[in-house]
Amino acid sequence: MRKFNISTSFLKSIWRFLAAWAIVHGSLPCIAQVRYFEPATVLGVQVDVKPIPSTVRDSIVTDTVFQGWSEEGFPTHYYKKIRTSVCFDNKCRLLKCMLYWNITGRYLGFELEKGEYLSKARHKPFKRKEYTRLHAILSDPSSRLSGLSYGELAPRAKVTSGRNDVDAVTSATATNILDDVVAGAAYTTYKMWHVVYGPTQEEVRNLTLKSLSPGLILKILDSPDPGDKIWALNHIRGYVRPTPALRERVLSFINAGQYNLAERAIHSLDSTELGADTVQTVLTAGLAEDSYAVKKLIIAKLALAPGLTAKTIAGLRSVLTGTNPQLTSDVLDLFTLHHITDATVVRDAASLLAQQNAFVAKKAYKYLQGLTVQEQQVLQQIQVFESKQAQK
Image (cartoon, rainbow, N blue to C red):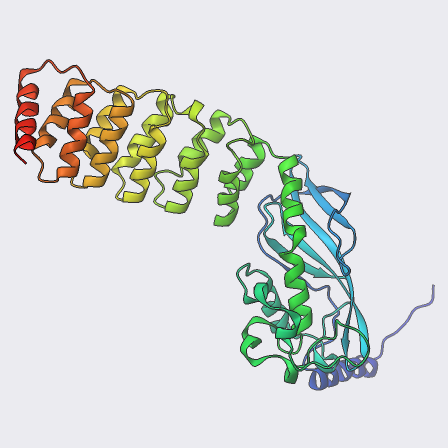
């Protein structure tokens, strides 16, 4: 075999070339593959990639969505290939990259083909900070780019080549949206963002729904991303039959001190589950939380239960005799609905007849009117209340 000796002078020439490139272009030419990613929900070894014909038609995105699978049999991510020309001053180069979505539909990342790079006005390659900036913009689903047209993005851009995808140079980018794009690459930023949050996002979510199972929901609930957890909680009731492990995980969010997750966890409970002692016990424990909003949600959910356990009734008494008139009223409505005849609850309700809050007193009276009261003291309290009402 012939041996090749690389001289020191040759290596120095290479480094001089790279240094000169950096001075002229503001960055080094792309040697390593460019990849920027957010944490994925499902981790592990990818063992398969399935090509699926896409129902989304877009002139710059290929008509195939690729679905990654883990060795455990869960979908891990999706990606599509982008092929489009990015033009400056009548000169165009092909942009080849892949956009990735998490299984919940959120943006996951982008990857350029080996040797590819993104460029700005005057064909300057992106610097590292500009790739980072682009990644941050693509990670923001609430970006102002959602409401912008291309004309608003670059109102002074002149198309002389007959193309309508000419990227705006820095001088032609509207100053009021400079914070929303990578400077000098407004078109590239705009187009990639709209692909990420366009119809493909819903398409990949629907593909995940076809593979949904209690095991996959559990995986998603372990995600570090709060939005993933919300998505999973939104896709339990009516989508999967909860296993004991999944039910336990869902219930853990109710008393975790995070309203958004607690609200979705409570919403995810099916009425058929609400008769279980374990479920009602966790819901009742949530009444000890400081959150007024969570307490209202729990009381409203218990209204859908087939009945209330003795432990649940005991836990609700603390709210009934509490200092919040609205919550007291809600509990009285709940006891009226379930026709609770517990003697202690009846006495608590009778004591509310003397409340200065007329709204609460009337609610207590309505509850007692629906019962067959035999305790003499309670009957006397009802008579006193009726006598005062008659005098008004």
